[in-house]
Length: 140
Image 1 (tube, rainbow, N blue to C red):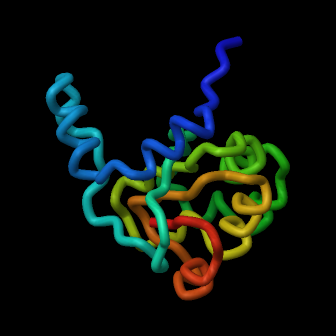
Image 2: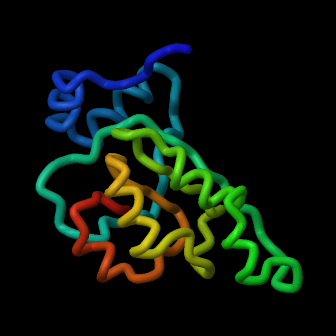
């Protein structure tokens, strides 16, 4: 298995690079759409968030087939993502740019922080945005 961990030295260097510089470097390499539009920080963060992306894609769920009890299942994709996102990585959630349903709240973001994840990004909604913004966990 390949080890994809960033060294502390590399992580420190990346924290000094602007988002615009990263986007331009990717663009020059032919990767023209490697960003999410419309996200904003939930808090005021002292340094840039750096980490590999660990992705989760949300699919629309029928209300009659998706009761609250499904979230108690240990195999639920959201729970699996939160419990398996590697230390130092960023959980990136694709919600199809639909903020009508929350992709996470302060409990899940706190769990990611406690597990040592580097941050969380969603193009959907968050519950408890004020509480998430007060955590020591970059969240966008």
